Length: 382
Image (cartoon, rainbow, N blue to C red; front, side, top):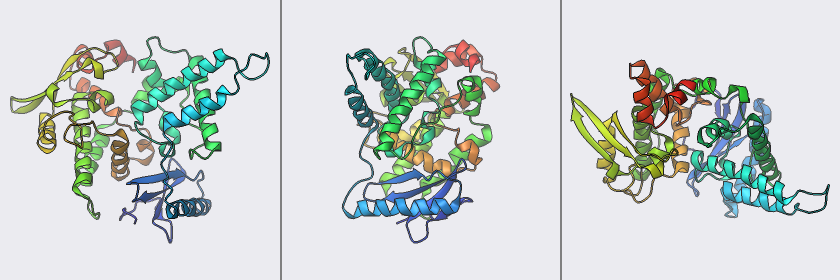
């Protein structure tokens, strides 16, 4: 059963099916809600022609329906499993014969390059399966490598990692484990200040995002249960808290109630947040004082105030980033933001929005750096 009831420009129903065609970045995509798996199946059709897109979508939709008929699930192989399979295939090439196959040392290098890819995906696409990946899911990879490496990697290192990642993706694509033949990466020269500016929310975009998230909770035109409504509410408050605290995605995901206190001052509800060193990439604790304490209070009342702040099971485990991203994409589709801009905006951009907004309000860079667990140099360089 198709869940979407209203359609935008460049969106249309695949006639006679429960699937939706939509255009993203000039390329037609299609999606269908898999009720038995509780998630959407999204695939690129690789064309800007609607006639060709419909033909390909019907072919793929029929394949999905055949799988459904025999109980075959669309989501199976995880990113880690896919990388493991690729490494096993490359392991068979290891040989000591000069000029034939690859050396043990080369195999070790390949494993190291893909270890970085695994780590990036674990942070940005946690719990995602291969068929959930999009071509642009590595768009922030170069920036992430430069931010997380002890020594910023050279351009040649990044280009070699890009080549190895796409060699792995190509292998998986040939075996129908993934729907895309390669990942897109920015030009190395575009990484840095320009890239951050592109991915930082403008004030109007942030307003459109949290407004769409608030309306999405109501589920107008949909039949949703309380579990789904709770998830949407958590994502809505995540957006508000991220924009008011400047926390990294990983820090926010792992935040626990024992490290959050709210209090009133001068008519505002503030939040006092202790960042556990185990949850931050710099491995240093810090204290954050931020506006938006009321958002924490709402979540505390809804989830019980124990364990993890962003949790669907009363604090036992933190929110699944796969479920988070499913709601995030649904909100983005509904937000009144330029379609091309949507491609550049990610949850991490809310941290840059916070930095920009607070600096524009007159907060000194040194104070912002301390608040966000970074350096003035890092802020001014990006």
